[in-house]
Length: 100
Image: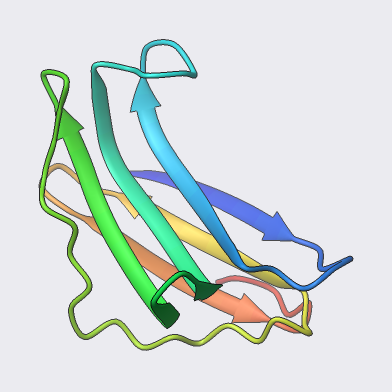
């Protein structure tokens, strides 16, 4: 198990933010293990979480299942991603609280 923590400090309102967990070069890698895309107000998507992956240069299907949108564009927040052998688990804390 591997843990990554990201902190976002809100200077301006977000339209969206995206986290890529990948190997290879920053632009157009062959493999992207996990994409977490939080869309506050982006195109036709409003307050929606979308996930995806890329394997051997081909993107998978976007998934936007039952993930609750817990972000407030007016508050700072942290995201913790647990990387397990067969899954990714995402947790959030807003308002500057500590992650457990």
